[in-house]
Length: 355
Image (cartoon, rainbow, N blue to C red; front, side, top):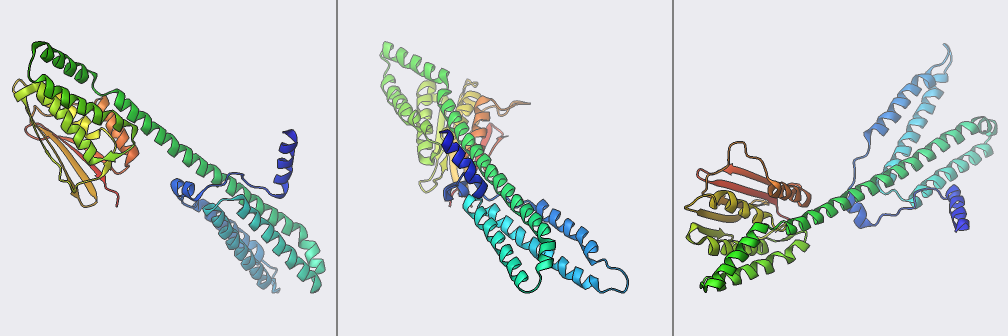
């Protein structure tokens, strides 16, 4: 093991660079972060500072023309170095880094040989240290840029993985937070009706079983079709209508052609809140309307009740807070708005539809 590590360390002297290689899917997932403009500014400022030093010459001499030529050469070399840096920024691979490094070093060596053969031996020997220093600086800058870029992409991939893990966790928490009082109250009503021989027991049991069958598996998904979400809402409202009787009426208006994926349980949470805060507190009960439609490139889902509306100074509870967080993680452009409907409350969910 130690010999293998030693060989790898020796190899880094001749073939440096990060070992991490990203797949095309990983690069697409991480996205292309913008090139740091500060690098261009830093190089430009240094070239501007270098210009008067190279163009200055004693009076009566023509050395400024030579200085201008040298400054133009340095500008060209700087532009080439920045072009290579941008290429490494787009694809920070060890192979590409070494290709550029060895390619530039070889080109510089061939240029020196050509100059020596054409009578510039003394000049090459005099400027040899400067050329090596500049080359070392450029290669080191490319190496550090490549390492930084690889670490940046790795950090972005870790961030996205953590977001996915958080989304899955919040989905599982949502599954665990299916209103316990709803389950217990439904079972209590069912037991009472069975004991008393009430004819409502059989329909309630069918609706409750269908609700659980539709609800429990869906929380294993990150997204689900709108049709599945609406079916779950329909089953839930059927169970609540069996329990509340004439105190609850509802209508669902979702055309078949209105389809889009969305995080599981988000519409159900809005309906549960409408029942808890708009219907159950009233002796007379009330009505809930669920609708969905396409508006351009967005899906708009609304849940409305005719209850007392939003209480003064109301704040989001745990259910709505979790719903908003899941929406932002699954679809950054999604919004959830609650407003007084006079009477009642209107919850509007808007999220972009995939093309």
